[in-house]
Image (cartoon, rainbow, N blue to C red; front, top):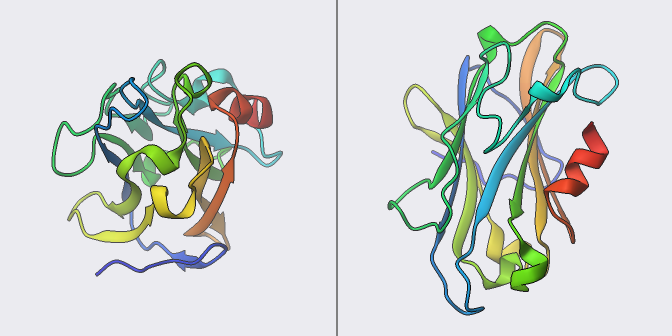
Length: 184
């Protein structure tokens, strides 16, 4: 049963394999398809990626340690009844220098297409047990982020030898470059 997490709330994961799913339905309200992108930033102690390959997204689908993998880029959404893009995390493979993973969602080419999450139908991001598909937490992006174009959904981090999940839910007006500037 999924927990409806509030911003800032933390839960222990107790899992070795975690999935992050992103889904949305096509909407032609702006004359363009909506292209949402799920990304992961694997951060060290200094809250920065140790090298470029620890930024997992559509152009770099797998971290060098093999711990985080992207399903690829869905350019239009609605390709399934569930997740259109997924990030899979195998915590047991994480390089010891990685202390947290931040998950983001952005709208590709939002400026040219004049798009925001409030215009995307049925958009969500969820975290789930990758072995059983049991949902742990879910955000409805169109309700909580009506004018934003980029969201830090949540993070997995290690505290006292236990991996936890924190619901961040912080929206921004910006794109993927905003997060690259923040974490690289």
